[in-house]
Image (cartoon, rainbow, N blue to C red; front, top):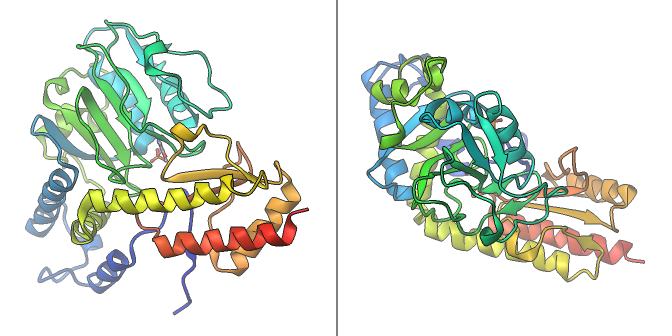
Length: 365
Ligand SMILES: *Cc1c(COP(=O)(O)O)cnc(C)c1O
């Protein structure tokens, strides 16, 4: 078998080895079913058991309050950008958006097709911080207040949820920090994310929706984006991402067996601390533009030599030679981005830090 590289890719991203091994063992024939999961009916008893177990584990590992439904959907995080205004406008004509990076910007632009979008603070470009919550210009009759809990491209993370008015539910995109830290559901109406960063394969989107927000979809809302249809049909209104749900179930088992979300959070803090200490301790050789208070534990963007593209290319080339891949920054920001999701180990992060230190010593002028 070809040897595996250390994968710092932003998504689809590394999946824990234990999950990959179990999936490989079960791939050809699943249990006593006599068929592969890829060949299995989504209405079979075997798959019904898998999806039920996935929901149960999701509830347990994330401590999801009872007033939330767990919906397994398709269409990615991007599909939810449209689903949200179509489902929970509830007759209100405006929604508030906190735009802190590429993903919340995209979410707002998509929502504009269905609802008036108001930004609660002026453009934060180039997206290196989050304004104090007290300064946000929030409306008390907004349909909801939208934010992206972790901006994957810019490395800007909310370490506490924003404030909101009593009757304005928070909507959080947690695609890139799903189960990387404990989540406080208070004041939230919808919490959603694609699974291809922290929770498994591409092709599955998990939407956690507060019960009272289900059943208000506009009459134009496609059935597959309707929370009501998905909920009424236990997420099998149509053929779901059968394999994606299975892989997410395995990832949730892995989370449980490795000590749960608190344990992951401790390790994630340790990994990100190592990265930022290396960057900040390099006297400007490495630089991260994000304010210290809002830096992400999952995606660490940085520049080398103040944005010296030939140095950055040399760094990436050396990383590849050392078996590390997926480190090129997003095309919109350039530089380097290390995505250190749940599945990326402390030792793998240390290998990257070692290479950073070695590279700095060799290239510092
Ligand atoms: C990756 C990502 C998305 C988009 O997910 P798709 O599944 O590609 O639609 C949305 N939001 C965030 C924060 C992401 O990281």
